[in-house]
Length: 375
Ligand SMILES: [Mn+2]
Image (cartoon, rainbow, N blue to C red):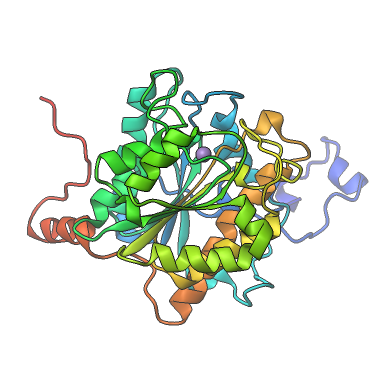
């Protein structure tokens, strides 16, 4: 305690209890992960789009806490916060990839989309606007869901930013999510992949699914998928030839014709024994180590346009295991992107809408919002 604050009349409990020593001091983010504000990996929270644009970040985390599209167990609205805080360490050396990702890549947490409950249409618009604004700064969005319906607006936004370039989707999931509707609702979490193909945001032939199993969707839906040129790898294939060989095929297929890949990870692709915190668990899934390795390989070998990690439902989780594997899924992609950048491949995107907005900004007042002026 500074001597000037000592007084002859006031007791000095600091001195009395030996609390006047000169300990090392720490401030956030250099504190244990359970202390201080919650951001992904204690990265700076930058919610202002103009500031994000000026910073030229490589990767931006975007939360989409939304689960009004679920067909069964809810709770994925709590996913982004649970994923952000599911780490015990601020150590940042990747043993598997031999890199310190945050020394190479500028990664920020850009907060959550402006979401309120019980309003699917508004929420999807807000997710679309947020992901579009973030992606239009050139940063690669890593979107934390949320139920899988968020992939419809999120991947649409990324496709719009990347146009005239195209994106393909590598989609890890127990379910194809290509239904025409969920009980008549076109925007439920069983339908986003059909909406993306119907709207033209992603071509069917650039859509690759991995890990499908169980008893849904029905055979007519697979007929529709075939007509679209979609490709999928059942869990049975992984059982027969192994995840490594299946991921090899998925990477090759994803690169046929698409300029960049949007990676969509439904956590229910992992066996519910290792990832129980999800809404529609399907026994007999992939191992966490297979999925994390697949993410490292994909993010390290192809141009990544964006990634999402969805269907983490913390109320059904046990001991945070699902949130932890989701956290690591994001981190493994970040580390692999860092290796790519170190090896000379740019990670940021500087074409499409990013270039258009940069040119417009050079000419006149900056215009970043997708929202039209309403006056
Ligand atoms: Mn899904």
